[in-house]
Length: 131
Length: 118
Image (cartoon, each protein chain N blue to C red):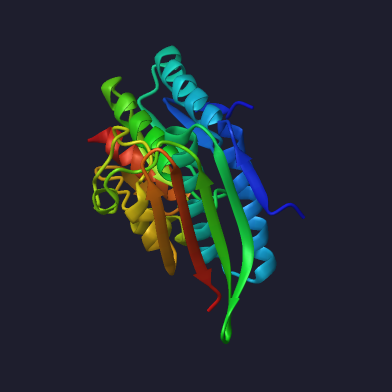
């Protein structure tokens, strides 16, 4: 199964979250975590579509000592983020309210890392562990 | 695909049966407002029982269509929000405040009737 979805248009957002929901279901996540994962993917894919134009979202199984989870990797070569601290503040938006923003996504998952360089793009990794 | 909007006396009834993509959500916004205008409906119930997730975009479209309906004189009641949807919306930081809600369609219609009598 292809675990990545290229995000070019809004239909790809739907494809990405459907893939995420399927992987989450297969891994044995409950309905609430499935909703968290699906929503997080939808938000990340929408950010790519809105701000970077294109990029990709990959969804894979991940493992650490004694635990299994799902990792969402969102990657684009868009304009990048100037002030990472600012975008991680609740209520910050450059799109006038489209998208809940990254703090919301961070709350939906267990681990969240972001790397971004202006002019080079953004790489976000979000993990949800099976409980 | 368009979301069917049913007329029931002076109310409109909508049941969202499948996952909403952006275009369907925006089309629904327009369709609902036209239908309110066409039928002079005073109230709307939108049921989400079959929906297992709502992201910020869908929530925004939904919040907007409720405000728009209000501008046209129609009250909207949202019903059937699943536990997983309620949890993720609040964690995401989305608050649909001042929105009339009910657990299921039946209670939603009762609530709407009471609202319209006031």
